[in-house]
Image: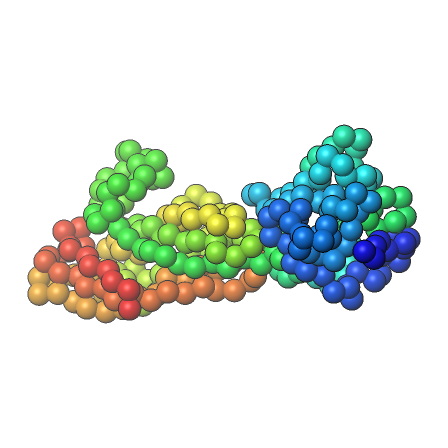
Amino acid sequence: MTSNHLHLSRRTALRTVAGAALAGVAGCLNDNDGSGTPNNGTTSPDGQSPLTRIAVEGTALIVELSEAADVDQVNLIQPNGELFGERDVATGARQISFEIGTAYAPGEYQVLALKGEETVVETTTELDPEIQIQDVGLFRNNPDKPWDDVYGESETDRIKNGEAFVTVENTGSGPEAITELVFSGDVPNPIEDPRGSGMYETDQIVISPGETVDLFSNSFPFGSESEDGMGCSPDGNSGQFTVIVKTRTRGIRVTSSYDVQYSGANEMTDCEVTITVS
C-alpha cells in the first residue's frame, strides 16, 4: 500500500490544497474500501483517518478526532483557497470547532489535519444552505401553533388573525439566516417593503441544516384591507399571493405562491380564508 502523506510546510499546504482532488465528507470518516485506506485517499500512520466526523451543529463546523489521532493543528480552507481559520489541538482533545456563522461563502471547504509541518490528512466538506418554504397559514386555521407565546396572551384573536406563520426548512448542508419576510399579491395588506424584517420582534432567524422553523409575520398581511389589498365578501373573492423570504448566506429571495379565497363575510375579522398551493 502506498502512503499518501504529504510532506509539505503549512504555508505550502495552504497554497496547494485548492487544487487537490479530494472526496466529500458526510458524517463518519473511518469508513474504508477494505484496504485500510480511507475513502478520501489519504492514510495516517495506523492506517485510519484521524478525523472521525465532520458536521455542522448550529452555526459551527465540528471536527471530531479519533483516540489515536496524532495531530496538533486543524485548518479550515475556504472555497477560494484562503485560510478560514486554524485550531490548535490540545493533548487528548477529541473535538475542535470553527464558528462559521451565517456570513460564510457557500461551497466546498477543505479540512487539513497537521502534525508539525506535515499534512497528515486532508478532506473536503460541503457548506451550502438550501431554504424551502413548506407551509403558510393563519391563526384561525391553525390554532395549535404557539401564537400566544409569540404575540402574547393579551393580544386579541383579531390581531393574531391578521398575522401569519410561514414554515421553512433548510435542506442544505450549511446554516442560513432568514432576514426578511414579505407577503405580496392578493392579501388584504400587501407590503413590498415592510419595516424591519417583516418577522415578529427579530431581525433574523438562523436555521441549521435539517432544521424546520416557523417564521411569524409582523406586517399584518391578513389584517384590515388596505388600498391595494384584496378583501373578503360573502360570495367569495379569489386571488393569488406570494411569500418571499430573503436569505443572508446565499443572498437570494426564496418564493412560493398560493391560491387564496376570502369568503363568508364583509370584514376580514369574520372572513373564512382558504389557502392552497398554486
